[in-house]
Image (tube, rainbow, N blue to C red; front, side, top):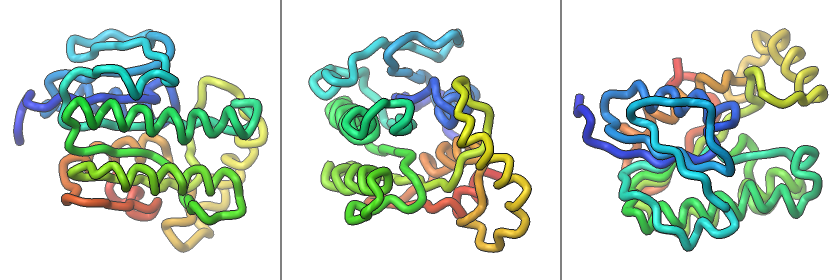
Length: 219
């Protein structure tokens, strides 16, 4: 295994998947530095961690540290964002701004968490925005683009989402009855582990990893 040779850029480390991902990258001996980009600093210190406070609206024109791998875990909900426009600003615009800046920084592998059901032609606004983001990323010609499409995420969030909490409790009970692995809810920690695994195994071109594959990779 290569040791301390790679540099990673991360966005969304304050979120559910991103928090687990950041911990995994900091413990991964293949990474020398991990740069976390966010609107505010994280309450975390580590010898390999470098934090950057950024304005995502201007990130596309910023110069980021040279890196090989970029991990994007940005995401919100329409309820939390307050409007469809604000939701799109995070799940589409901010993601593409980060991708643009990462491309200029020399990133070879770009990994992004979207969602199961993402489809640019969907009538469902959430799925359509996710799909449009995927299509835009495909046009950026990264050496390797990995799109992770998890189903319902399980894990404790910093903020309260009562409706989602009910869905999660129900999903934990019903998961054994959902035979297709892709349909089962997935632990955020599992997605993070799969993301790191894919960073070191994905082929050139575009790789789409649906939830069932993430379940297996993140064990």
